[in-house]
Length: 349
Ligand code: SAM
Image (cartoon, rainbow, N blue to C red; front, side, top):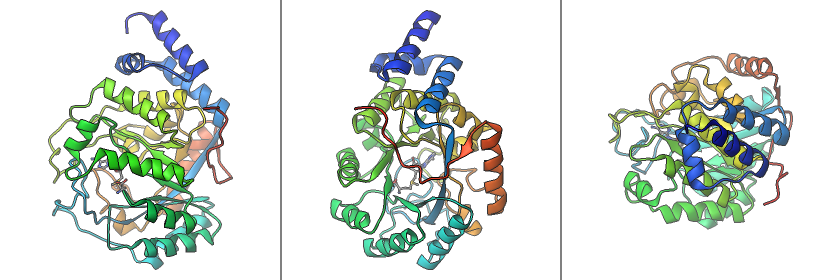
């Protein structure tokens, strides 16, 4: 965008009205250097969700997956990774540990592993709820009945990225999966009362700024409560192994735009951003993020949850991990959230 006045005007509109059309969003995504976008997102974050940064304890309990997503290292066809499945007792133990460190949300994530029945998952959720935490699930596409059972067991939130809201691109990257079913899942989750998280991969082959702008409008349309976005990182053993990786600046711009469009959502700094950007967590916190998800799983398994390279490379004690995050939060003038950190709606829709 050559015209600095136009850039100012677009950012102003976003900051005051939290609305923008697709073409203007795409134009902003194509701007080279947009510190004013980041500072506006930071102001809106402060005004609507305050200085609290919520820590959500992530437990990646199985890396088995029946899907064959083109970008993901966990895809069923990847024989190059060692598979693991945690015992329910191990999951509960990790959750109890996270609670000891003061975390108020447990996030249970896995590949789509049909070994765990919904009944098994309900029992795990029920036990973790007894610890007095919020529970977020991220176990992929299920039927409405299964989502209902998990909600009744006590699950509070659910993360299911749309990955891309472009139906054609989506279906080209997800063999034997349907875009319409993914969207159906998200609407079911909303209707069932889950705080619903979605998000996209940034830098997928064939993705354009217009498609990313549409992703943002899609998040707004479905009234997502949480948005997680990270760079696409090419992974060995997948059909996209030799493609270019996603651009960190574009991720930061997408985060800033998401905050400006949806001021009261919860938005994590994703692990993928932390892996790809120097100082990724700090940068993400400055572009609208208010959530960090420390990995509270078992060390031996962290590296095996190899959705992309670089993840789980840095094995540190849980105590060290939490301390580093807490130090960063306070260095940035922010505070660790003491509550569950659910979405508090302050903007009328
Ligand atoms: N099975 C669940 C689902 O489908 O939502 C959760 C697990 S899935 C591995 C979690 C997320 O990892 C996906 O939503 C995807 O965006 C991200 N992911 C997978 N492969 C990736 C890659 N190569 N680079 C960056 N992120 C990736």
